[in-house]
Image (cartoon, rainbow, N blue to C red):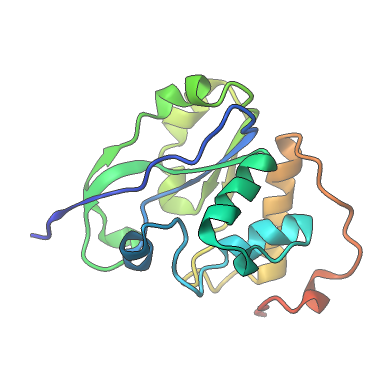
Length: 182
């Protein structure tokens, strides 16, 4: 049996309107002690794409500040688990984060968005908070069935649903140099 892994602390502030909830950090993220630390994960390009900003060009600390300044928060459903590798399907003996504390941690919270199917398994907990809850397509590179454009459109719906002021799209998503798939 693998050792018990500990997740990352929440990135939440008093102005957080939309909390993006993953399942549990992958190996690269745990090693770097950074959310979405795998270079092929689409998380940072997706969030940056909402505001048409290259977040990957910023240091990790500046990315987190940028998120908080724009009303976004990050956390995971699971506080700890056992897992060999990075796949959600390999998660065993998971312990939940204190999702009931979200209203206290983020008094301006207007919506929650689950990043992928494993995170969305916690809908019974997040739905009980009385906020809109969105199930987003996973930002993982393993989720190749959704194109970047299609993922971005779903993420945009969640951001608008939380009342975040997004700029109007000024050019087609596919012309912005992001990785796209059929």
